[in-house]
Length: 109
Image (tube, rainbow, N blue to C red; front, top):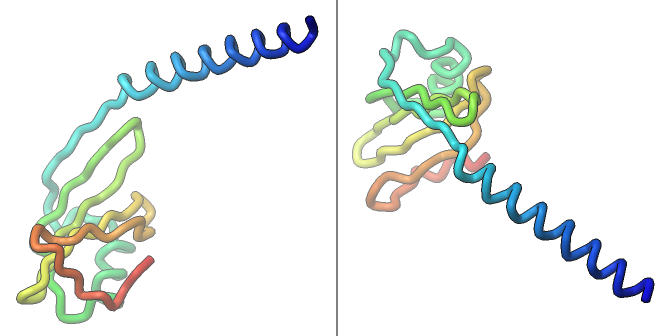
């Protein structure tokens, strides 16, 4: 009898967690805005100058998702194009490959 109660409680708990997870997924808010390269935080431009020598910044976008601000910065050095994703404090979060799947390969963070 006790085992049945434990299983019932576990099933109910899992049901609540699943419903909560689904509700969380549907409430994602995301906004994107093009920004001027000059308006990027200095920490980001300094990182690109140091770690991506020879690359130039083509464009930048600020992205706010669930109240978290990141910067997506497109850099180019023919024939390579990459999009770098930074936190607002200038920390590199990830590198997105260009549409052809090329990557310059010198940085993997």
